Structures are given as structure tokens and as C-alpha cells.
Image (tube, rainbow, N blue to C red; front, side):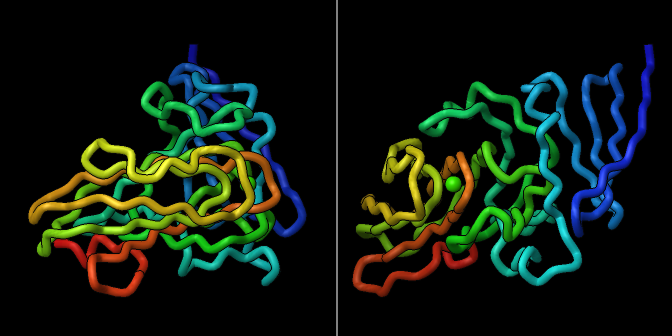
Length: 227
Ligand SMILES: [Ca+2]
């Protein structure tokens, strides 16, 4: 049976989301008044969907996201990391994302530079969720100069960095913005990278990834520097 319902919500300065539930497909599509859309699976944690907070805003400068620091965009560019989004239950450590089903469309990013911020400043790239979501970034990068590479994350909440399927940084618990480091020796050539991140409870979030190639200064990790 095909069921379609439509209703409107408005919270403060938030854009008006239009919810369209298609029970036959087992999914829901959120359409914001700026035309952007987000598909949400009802098969996964349908109860969670009832508490989606609509923070996407066009008005106040105190809630407007900084678009220079986003979890990603919906546009793929060469070398981008692909970020799959998951809605998660309330846990004190990042769950195994391989066992969860992603929601919505993936994000694409060449770097991760979400500086520490309050959750109510908006969630760039993640409309409709302020806490209890996770992102799995996967991609590859090319190392021209063999050597030791130091990586550093700044995250709130947890993050796990893997290079070539090996854990380099495991800072996967619930915590305030904090730094974690790890190092790995990389031969010349292509390497796989995976960053699992989750935002647990409010009130803060952050996700940054830095790299220090041997003999160089630390810089933001950007796949465009490794190709
Ligand atoms: Ca947090």
C-alpha cells in the first residue's frame, strides 16, 4: 500500500522542513524550504527520527554554520574522502559502523576541519541532527615521499583513524574536544585512509585531521596535497 503524508514544522529561525513519508519504500525524505533534501531510512532506528532537531538556519549569525568548515558537501571532487552518515543510539564509544546502514546521501570532503564549536551553531553538512550521529570517511591518498608520517586528530566526540586498515589513532570515546596522535611509516604509493567519527551528546563537537610529514611542519591533512 502506498502511503504519503505531508506536514510542516517550524522551530525558531529554522527553515521549514517538509516531511514526506513513503511507507512503501520504508524511507522518508526531508525537504527544506531552500530546496535541499535529505533521505532518511525508517528501517534504522525509526524511533530516533521522532527527535530530529531542525537547526538549519538562515537568519541569526549565532546559529549560522561556517561553511568553510563543513563535514562535507554533496559534490564529489577528485580525491575526495567519501563520508557516509549514520544515526546511532546513545553509546559511550563509537560503534562498529560496518554493521550500520548509512542514511541520506554521502558527503565528500578533501579535508576535515570542523573546529570545536557548540552544537547549537549548526551542523554543517548534517541537516536534521545535532547529536548521536556518526560519519565514516573513506578514501585514498598518494605518498610521494616515503617516510614517517605523524597524524593528529582533534575531536568531540570520538574518532578512529586507520591507514591501510591499521589503527593509527584510537580516541573513540565520548569526550570534550581533545587531541590524539599516532604515527605510521608510509612507502611511496597509494594508501587507504578511513576516519570513523561520532558526535555523541551535546554540547560540543569538533573534527580535525592534521598531518606532519617527516621534516615538515604540521598542516591540515588534505587529499589534494597527496596525489
Ligand atoms: Ca559532543
